[in-house]
Length: 311
Ligand SMILES: [Zn+2]
Image (spheres, rainbow, N blue to C red):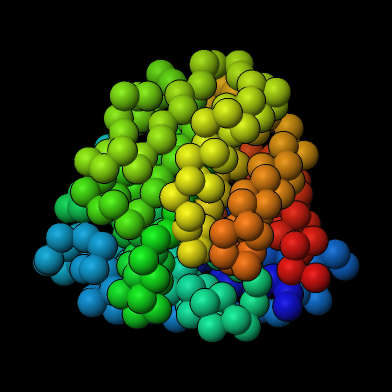
């Protein structure tokens, strides 16, 4: 079984103001990467639009309509200080969440071992009733609920190696003992949450704050001593990755010092746990990563590692 690549050109229609780091070129860069010889043979699927019901399994009732009403007819609407919507943003956000729903359906029915969702807007800052940090819907939590509700899994896990704390994922997983969540992130940094004592209502959340300038080795140690043992202990039946690539040394929004190859290592380490717990089932979804060269090379390393596991 191979790795599925899930994306949609509607995700290019979510526009942000000039100079905004979360821009169309990020996904264009990845679509060019996917046409290179190493990746062009990968099976691709178009992300469906997620439904209101799927959004509201994760978010508060009425949240979908709240976001839909914010969409402007022209120009931009400000959702919060750094989160904007353009006329096609709702559709892009529905594709981004829908990609995760489809990935769950494909992987849990055994059609693929793992999947990568190349989507935007990202999702891990979107809280139960609040869009923020460039995120509208919690793409990964919407996928997790598809696995729990429709495929009737009992335990899932989410590992978030984006440089920012996944406060939205934490908010939506906080009271749900079925959902393990681990985040490594630079601290102090936006959004300011994710301290080590934030462990969730059932102790199923692991936060590992990392100091500015942390490089590959300290991240590896954090994964090996804190994240991976707790992940395995949860015995997930499917593992999601909130795959942000903004801890890369080139990234303009943060000051960690990771290199491309650490993303291959982290992916392999997570896949090792998945091999032991859940037949290798891993679903990865793009979050941040704002330097185009850093993003391209890091995603290449991540995808290569996923493909190695699905041979
Ligand atoms: Zn980020």
